[in-house]
Image 1 (cartoon, rainbow, N blue to C red):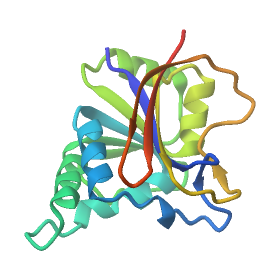
Image 2 (image 1 turned 180 degrees about the horizontal axis):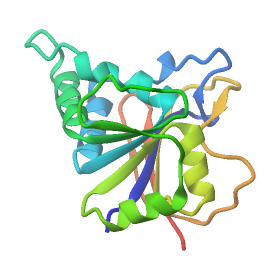
Image 3 (image 1 turned 30 degrees about the horizontal axis):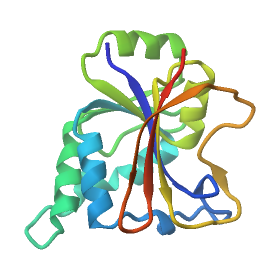
Length: 186
């Protein structure tokens, strides 16, 4: 059975986007990007909300020629090879291979998906991940805390949820970012 993992790059004050919807402050350097590539490599399926999918779909057409940074090329290859499910009521077609649309996020369907997979699944987008956390579907939370305070915006984690977590690892990076890996206690 695959685990469902929520991973997010977040400001130290807990936001994935600032108040203007920007997240340029979260761009990883080469060291952190290489680490993220290793975290993403075992993922078999990405679950995305529409906005996160539209952001990530750029990896489908990104130039992977020799002039591109190796960590960027590598991530593009990982992303393209992974199955993607997009939850959207408004999206009528996808811009990437190995991708299909589901009209609604149904927790029972995700439970069946997890049970039928040997590889782990990753959920992307704070709002969709919040739904999955509330439904008790998320097995691990990985926060990549970036060394910046943005003062407000879209929270990385849902409000109104109380959840016990067990720290499974922490790793600092030269940039000042820190990866925090938590297992959700049942």
